[in-house]
Image 1 (tube, rainbow, N blue to C red):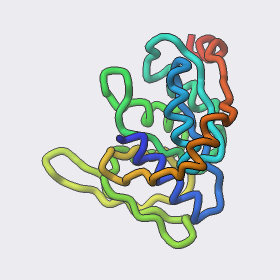
Image 2 (cartoon, rainbow, N blue to C red):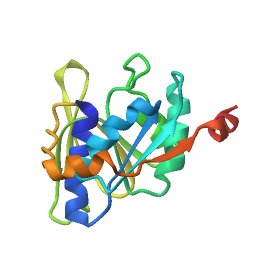
Image 3 (cartoon, rainbow, N blue to C red):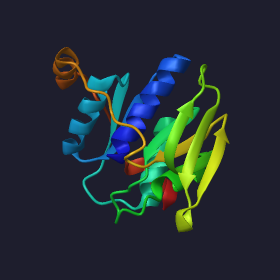
Length: 176
């Protein structure tokens, strides 16, 4: 649910800004189903970083950083497959040396997409209001946005769409 929420917010932002949305995941071939769903909903292209084993959050973030490159905004779900730690977005922001806004529960995108107002959950039931501009990694909770429904035509097209596949072998050498 968190990844779907992140995808929806990426699609909304891209519509306003005229950007493309690249859906990226790391996992075995079976992970491509989620990428095809992202393409059906409006992602421009999809990339799977191939791995057959459970990678650490640092390893995942390093591999993702190579793929996102100089993207202005990187939208992530706040849940990681490694024990649900949600640490991948923080490691990713650190690796890219860009701002991070983690644990977002409400997001508003201004008219031209240059400014994002977000609310994040803090301990003890408190909230923090953030103003985000420039490059950032944003992680959202699953209830933040509901993913749009894909048309049948888009679902059929996504089933035969090309998905880029990258290897993690060079990433393993980087983090050594």
